Each structure stands twice: as structure tokens, then as C-alpha cells.
Length: 139
Image 1 (tube, rainbow, N blue to C red):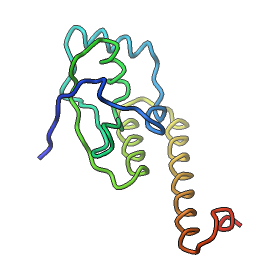
Image 2 (cartoon, rainbow, N blue to C red):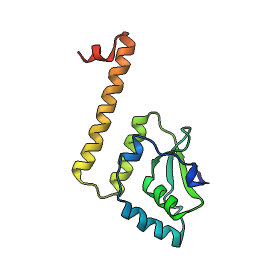
Image 3 (cartoon, rainbow, N blue to C red):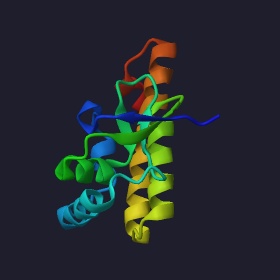
Image 4 (cartoon, one colour):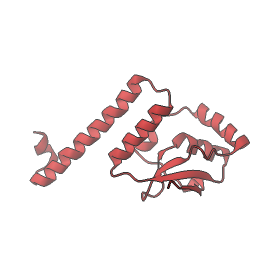
């Protein structure tokens, strides 16, 4: 069963690479904050945080920024488990591209970043297995 929690927005953390994965315009933050002041935080769209990672926001940076701007005392979150940072990034890209009107180039850029991260991780794992440096693996 999916459970949502109510939490103070100030208790949520934003960090790289998630906070800059999907840039947003501050004018949109102001518009959403104005809406939140009038109608409150929409519990139908909770902020997704990485379960077990100190309330790190994976999806919902715009909503969080608007809630903080509006002075909303509590927001709804959903704690989601991910096996790796790459899985969390892929989730964030997928949910945002499904919801936002991003250009094909913006979507392609985000997947390119993810592919490079995966390559770097696999190179690092191989180096540890072979007991050689990442640089030696790359040669």
C-alpha cells in the first residue's frame, strides 16, 4: 500500500544531481506559490523523496520551491525506494518528461548524462574487481 506523509518543507533536502536535473523558471515558482497560498498544497501530487536518504527530493523540486516561497507549513511526500542513484535519476527523468513539455534535445541531454554516469560506475566496478585504477581500465 502506498503511504503519504505530511512533513515541513524545510525538512526536505535537495542535492545534486537531482536539484538541477530539470531546471525551472522562478516565474513559474511564483505562480505556483500564489496558487498554493490560495488553495494549499495539492496532496494529489506529493513530492517524491528517496527512502532512507535523509528526505532527499527526487521529484518535486518545483513544488518544494513554491511551497517554501508560499510559506506552506506542511507538504505531502512519498518515500520511494531506489536501488541506486542511477535508478533515482532515471525515475526523475521519466516522471518529468512524461509531465513537462521538454524539448527532445533536453530529454536527450538528460539521458546522455545518465549513460555517462552508468559508464563511469561500471568502469569503476571493473577496476575494483581487477584491482587496477579507473584510468587503466579506460586504456
